[in-house]
Length: 194
Image (tube, rainbow, N blue to C red; front, side):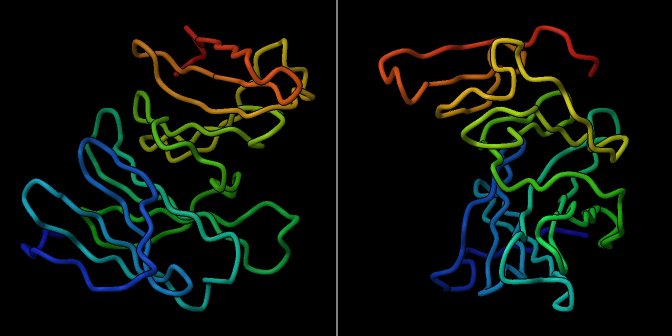
């Protein structure tokens, strides 16, 4: 699929920035997030990716753009709940080069995804934004979800504001506890098998 030169995206108040990858932006649009735009803002180009209306719902539609580490393939991961929000979400992947959606193994919702958590061809996010149960990841090369342990000090009951990021090519976890608003804890994950 080729990027289409266009200076303006469709005018809508419902466009939301989902994330970025290597300078490309992933934007979600439409009332029920049924259209995705992958944009190159430098070249004023974008592609429009349509999502199956039969699978979209009022909650739980999340998208993220990523790139495989070795194959240099740009892909959009979509997690969504079709029926019961308490079960694991469904997951599909769209490969920009082929222009097709296909199912991947069910994993974790990417709903709490931090903006800057792409590392080594994987996207990372906290399982819960206020108590770090675990760190989830999706590998765009193998197209598999993974669960990483949270830092041992968390023990699944850390109550605070949690963000993931990248520091010096390593995954980082930053926590500001609710009961100690002036204390910030930062953990750097040097090696976790990616």
